Image 1 (tube, rainbow, N blue to C red):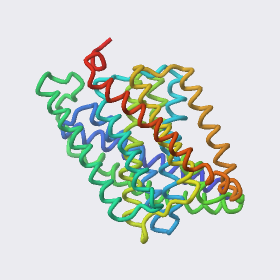
Image 2 (image 1 turned 60 degrees about the horizontal axis):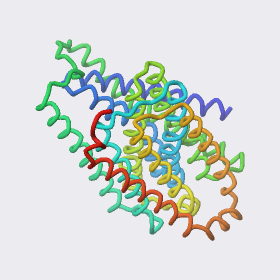
Image 3 (image 1 turned 180 degrees about the horizontal axis):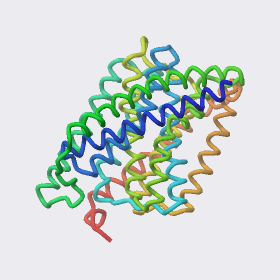
Length: 359
């Protein structure tokens, strides 16, 4: 019976996310916001609302391991599985000119998460800094658009149309009902998922990193797959990038803000999940430099995600955690060096005249 309850809760969250995105897109058009900004913020952030509601609900209930696991697990799922599946459907094209700021913010979000997690706790100060960084990123995104609009007219900007009060009211209700469905569905989903995990003998962290993370990432998965089917690969990539930034700076930030004693990071998260997240995030740099993600890249991403799940299941055993703790320092050092190396290449490629030219 709990299996059906979990699936039903997922359906409620998906419906809520769909209503939220539909209503927000309409309001954004009425407000004359540009199409690309809608895609990055409304679509990318809107599809991450399940992660936000689930993690915040988990934090207020004292289940901080599930809260942090949901956010980190969702980012890994988004980067490897969703982009991988989308690339298999149709090779993804990355527009270099418009992704420098977004990719920089994505790298910065993972780096700040790792730095703030060194003491094993994300507290009130770190939570506030995360939310401030998110506002700075949104401000930079808006400034970039305004400068571009001044230089040349954006052909993708929505045409100003007359909208009836009834239509605007209907879409405003979509936003309210969508948020309500997300909140109710997330609490329902979290309760039954944790209960089911306990009966199966799985840890709270494992269920957060896998089942809860994949479940709350279904809106991103559906959005990106549909975008790839329609050959709108820029939306597929922007959806994942925007969602991953939101998951760290807003989902983790808000969850730490409402948690009574902050977010305490379990040992497996510190030893394995955070270094692996930084490794996965750094893989966006080669995709940026190549300007594309081929089908075989996507297949490798899915294989890497399945391998991650296998390792995650193994280290859920305390004996394996102790073994992993012995190699924590060299493992983290290798990942940091890999991350820094790719960031240096990204910076050199970005500031180089050849790096910003169109091929």
